[in-house]
Image (cartoon, rainbow, N blue to C red):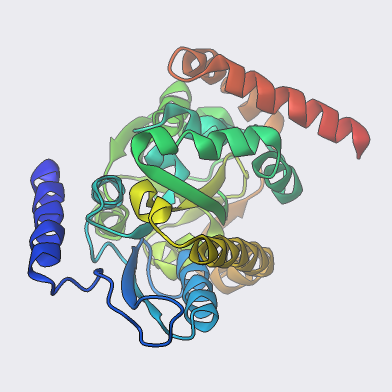
Length: 342
């Protein structure tokens, strides 16, 4: 079904281009600068989420810098398909752009799950430093071979754990819980190592699954938990910062390569400003969201992370078999040097 949707979207783009009526086709703007285009940006979270904030900043910058020649249309909440379907649509040129979770892109490029490794980075500054380093640039470049131009990262935050069964204080408390995970092999392996059973499903289906008891719990940044109202159907929250969640702002590589050099610069500038907007939004939201949800949970715990760090060490060895061990080593080496200089 997923492959069929991608092929149908690609056929739609092809037929539209042949007929001259496709919204993404270019026409003379009449001002001698840029040609008129309409670009669609899709993502899987709701309006008002950090992805939405980043998309709106991108839209604002592109439309201003091109004097309105480029129109950016924003489609939240999987309106254009699931996260994985949208990635594949960008690859074949059926969708212009997406703010795609790095952990979902890891199904295509395994190395994009590197920062999903549990407790790899300790705080936002470390995560930003990795993403802005030479290793971060190497990660972005990996998208090109898959037809993806990775423009910038978009921050989502550190994931926390909720469930409906009991408070989480030790690694043993996760044993036997049915946890929802995105289809990210690193995160799936993390919770299996901790003794949980894992179910994968699209983000838009998680609320119903939690409310009906299909799964006991899930993990996401506080902003996503609040904006998607998971706190309404979960009793317990554990603040662990166990993995760093981020997305990539991606564009079809061929589409980007076909842009005028000046427009390429505008697109890159807009995506960088979208990244900065996501950083600012996330920094301001963690405490605010926790305060808003304080009374919704039966109990909020802040466990000692050291026992969890020890419990998930086997995940690193298993992931070295599935992704480039050099990338993992590069990130670890970079972090050691970075921490020594702080």
